[in-house]
Length: 432
Ligand code: ASP
Image (cartoon, rainbow, N blue to C red; front, side, top):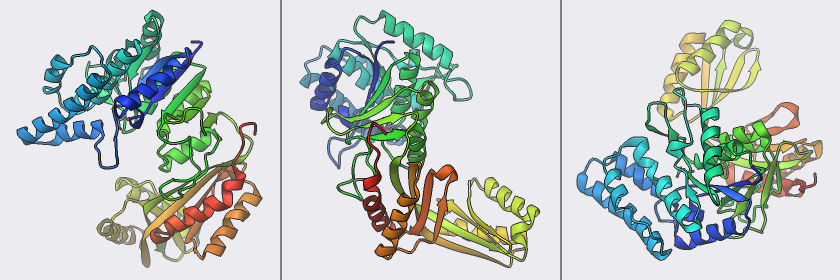
């Protein structure tokens, strides 16, 4: 397709005004032919996302409470329809909605959102149930999906609007992607329709070097590589779903993250390759550090194997930090106090350890940068030294690409702020 695939997130479609802004963006460029939408998100800090309301409907047992949630959902959609003066009536769909459960029910947020947005744009509604196909193992069936989407697009007089977040299973049911999955639908649509560009419109000014809740004046990173974005998303950066990068990377589709409220303002290009420059800084909490100590434990293959298989049986993917002759150290995420205690006992039994040390309450700050230069690393160390933060571990990834620093959870924000300050001058420009 000579064109662009465009995706709007929940905040960009949270009410009639935002929908109107998003529609103006689509109309401003006739290449914007394939559009993917999220369900309406929060209108204010204390508001509810439509998807969260649907999830609550699925879980709630009490009929009166369930009905109250349905009424709330209906009034949000009906309010948007009335304000936009669209000739839409969902009475029948609202009846069907009450008979649904699970993924099928939760998918209705994107379904209604896409119906409204298609009517607003006068585009063709292309239900994801009829054009995004999962295989039995949960992967997407690219061949069927591509055939259905290209056919839909070719027949549409102006363009198509596809609901994000769901598709259909080989057994005719509805299946959801994980949370934030409309980004994945957008990437699949970009790939399947051979789009030249994937534009992802969100509520932030592109990809910021650090979380704006921590660093108020975080700078926009104008250029990111696929690899940086995948790493940073996997570490918890919320701008684009980590799995959305996979379909884009396959066909090397340039992707741009723009802000719906300021579509021509600061934005981020995500490209296959970039020479150098910092990509992002992501902090996350909930880590526990374990040390297994015994003479020769670090060079005893059987002991190392036992540690790894015990952790894997318990559902953990450990990050091994160091292997000294008499100590093996690793990091686990989301291991609460009681579980850590039980694990320490099991590790001691399985490896004949003399001591197993456990240190919780740790945070990780991950930095990704293509061509992480010695100057950049030195800037990070200097910043940490002057801040007084004492990292409890530090790891350099392969090929000078990533750096991970462990600190106390209480020091996380200060660490992120200091690293942001030290690396902001190393942000790459679009011609790097
Ligand atoms: N509405 C879904 C969610 O809240 C999917 C998305 O917005 O991407 O997770």
